[in-house]
Amino acid sequence: MGKPSKGSEVTTKSDKKFDKKLQFYTKVKDTVTSLAVQKEIGKKKKIRSRQKKLKAYDLSNLSEFLPEFNALQKSALPAPDLKMNCKRRQKLVLTEGERLNKVLDHPAFQADPIGSIFQHLQSQQPPVEEKPKKKTNTNGSKKRNRKKGKADSMEI
Image (cartoon, rainbow, N blue to C red; front, side, top):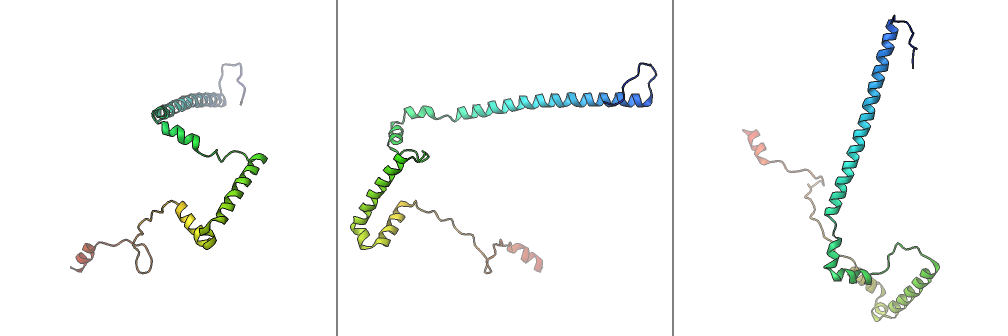
């Protein structure tokens, strides 16, 4: 690394500095390796605790007691994340074409197209829960009200 040591017994100041430096570097290297080992052990423990938590929340055993769950799973539409290929695309075009013809032939749609579409969309959307709005001042800022007790004590 630095200055090579001499064969003589006489050690100069620079040799002592070099030896100290080597000792320091070896200590640093040892501590770094020991910290790395401790860190690896800690990571393994964290993974194990996460796996234990996941086992605690495992609800797969409940499916035996819920036969409706299996029936709903089978009756559900195929997963939408499937890749679209030519056969699926043709089938989709046919089904959507039939649906469009049914809508066009429906008497409510023929009487009021826009109204019937609006009514359909309203029935399909989940109800919106309105949150109460925070009170605002006359200028629209959202300042909080100060306690009146402070104002009374200032007048005395």
